Each structure stands twice: as C-alpha cells, then as structure tokens.
Amino acid sequence: MEVDLQGAGLAWRDYAVARVSADARIANDQQGSAELTIEEAAVGSARIDLAYLALSGRPEDHALRTTVQAYGSQLQLEGRGSLSAPAWVADLARIDLANEQLGTWSAAAPGRLEVSPEEGHLRRTCLEPEGGGGRVCAEAIRDSMATSVEVAITDLPLAALPIRLPAGIELTGLIDAGLQAAMTPGQLTGDAEIS
Image (cartoon, rainbow, N blue to C red; front, side, top):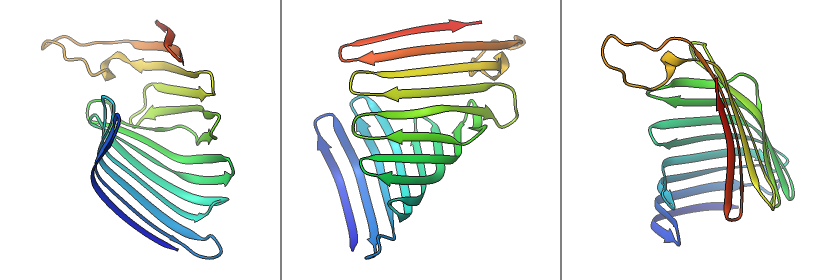
C-alpha cells in the first residue's frame, strides 16, 4: 500500500494547518515507512512552526524520529516504538531540546512514553545542559479524570536564566525549584516552590 497526501490551508474549530504532507509505504508483511510533515499549525492560541515524524519498521517494532519547532525552540526525539493495540509505547534514546537563550539540553538517560486512548504517561525524564550545570526532570500522567505534571529543577546556575540585567550586574548561585500541577475539567491546581 502506498499513500501520498498533500494539503494546504486546512482548518477545523480551533485547529489550523498552513501545509501538511504525508507519505507512507507498507508492504504485505506490514514492514513499512511513513513520514508526516506539518507546517505552521495552530491549536487555539498555541503555535507550532514545524512538526515532522518519521517511522520505519513494523507496528510491533519500529524506529521513530521526530522534530518539533515552536517558540524559538527545537525538540528532537529518536527511539523505538511498539504498538500493541490499543497501547503504544516508545523508548526514547535521544531527547534534545535547543533554544537560543538556554542552549541545548539533552536527556541524561532514555525516556519512556506510554499512550493509549484512556491514558498516557511520560515517565520521569531528565534533561541536562550541554555544558553541564543543572538538571530539569519532568513526569506527566493523563487519565480520563485528570492530567498531572511534575517538574523538578536542581542545581541550575542563576547565570543560565534568560534574564537581561544592566551592565556590570551578574547573578550568582544555584536555584532549585519544583512544580506540581493537575488539570481536571474546569479546574487547574498547582504548587510551586523555589529555593
């Protein structure tokens, strides 16, 4: 089976896409490859400049590579996925997040993402800056009742923060911070602490 799709100027409710293209090749033995590119997308007020996904292999064992560009940042993921309907699991060997102000941050260890129609779970995943100094860890869980996120920042040098200060003034020291947030229909709660 071969699929080639092209689209432009698509919109529905709060969703809009300037350009989209999809290309898939699947053999009788389910071995195949697929690429999806979305340019200039919007979901409500959120904007995505580019989203790219490439898959190759079989549903139960496939390689994946994705790039997302938005808000002056670029996220790159690489790993292996496995579909056992209705659940999909991805072991992410590479996670890189690059931003002009904050530099490049990479995963300290592989991450794991589990998704099904009823729930989703990003296992605790930690990123560290290219030159060292600090760590940001995040975990997210979604079920039919709520979505919760936990973020922990440890030993981040204050000088690494994207704060513009007058000439001659420097920030020194380290910051630790934590955030726990939960979103249920009609309600957002959270706790944050900084030290």
